[in-house]
Image (cartoon, rainbow, N blue to C red; front, side, top):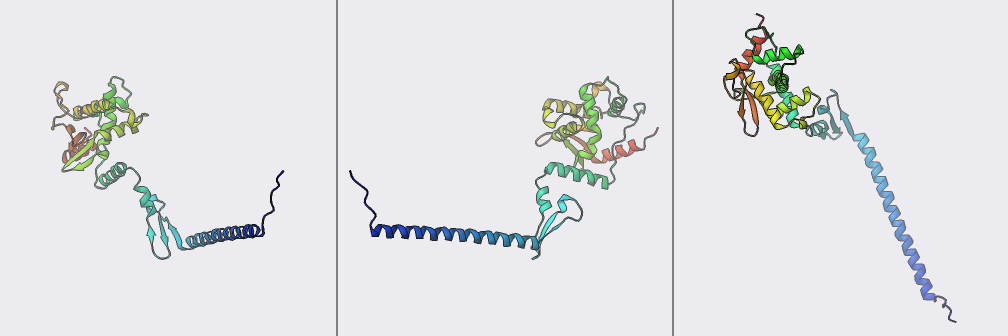
Length: 242
């Protein structure tokens, strides 16, 4: 029967040295960790002392972070850049038009002989009349929003199919994704046809003589109005008590 031999003096010495080396390495790691923790604590304190938040207006775009060295980061601007650019531009356009004196659409009575067919249709909807087709009724929701939502371009006012889809979503309980292209196009056709003063059988949505007509845009279908004619019409409608 064999028995294990006791370790030699050299082996014991090697084991002791190995243990000491491991202890030294462990202590070095602990000290490095403590140094990092001290540095983080110092940076945290420095940050609290050196950074000021400025938000005087309460508007998110005005929120900024400023250091005592004078460096400033426009935090609010960075946040706003993540917002929908189309929506921001749309709101800016509406504000600009209000500042320029453009008024919201005033719908005249269906008995007013100067009223456009779209105005009479809106009046019927407001009275709860159920004779309007679904897309005609939807057109009466889009028309009053044409002025505020359209964009000005080379003397014209334009609202594309995406803008019409957003209006339908906002005016109903359906999301914008639920409005398919064919329905949106039909609604746009009714908006254009009902701004014609011709007989129903002669109305053409692409007729440039309509107050609003349809056209093929660069990427999407558009509802288009002459800017001067639209402003004249809104002013006439606003003061048109006959």
